[in-house]
Image (cartoon, rainbow, N blue to C red):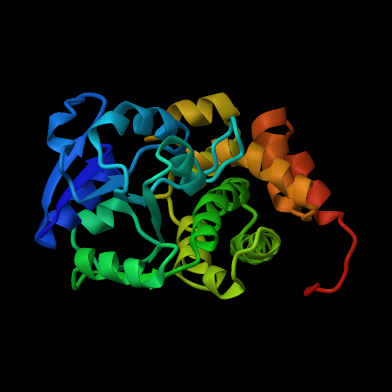
Length: 302
């Protein structure tokens, strides 16, 4: 049994806390509403489960209470807007001696809480360490596979949120199942191009944290990102759609920096460009849909 701290008492933090408890660990949850640092003293591992844009502030707040070489499992999915850093890079910036790992995959907090079958992947720089924590936290209904492609797992988790917004907009406009399938597939092509350019392994994106998470998030109203896009597709403004969301819409914060990184690395991502134009530049969904449909035809694989 290990003593595990969970940063964040939202739906996903609560779900992972329950997973850790059911796996036999002693769990201590820290949140802004319960900011006492004493329970975090002497913990064996930390799970970061707060919105991506809040990760730096939260890590800074608990920095004084945790061991310098602590295993730190990141469940936050996104890219920091202010710096363009992925979450493992934010951890390295704030807690340079910590050992960041990433857990991601097709999973809704409500399903995990109910004990419904779910499979995710946990990545660490060393596969042996990923295997250790995957085995330590796995349950019969919550299977964790191990990986050593931290960057690939993080990219899949962050970019699928942006693509889910696109699919939500399409469904909100009533464009049909075929359009959603096309958007998901072409979005996956963008995701894999982006990941390859940033040094991730293609097979990682074919797995749970890439294709698996994308398929779930692009097709379910349980996804806040899909629901946000759906509201925009039905005519709500970006501001109103955000206000109506049940929680943080990570893709709305990720899309601007994802587009910037794509431009920086020379990756063609027209669907990400379209979501950025709608969310950040007040472009109309109709104009962006027309722009995508008017792109020149070419080979599918390039």
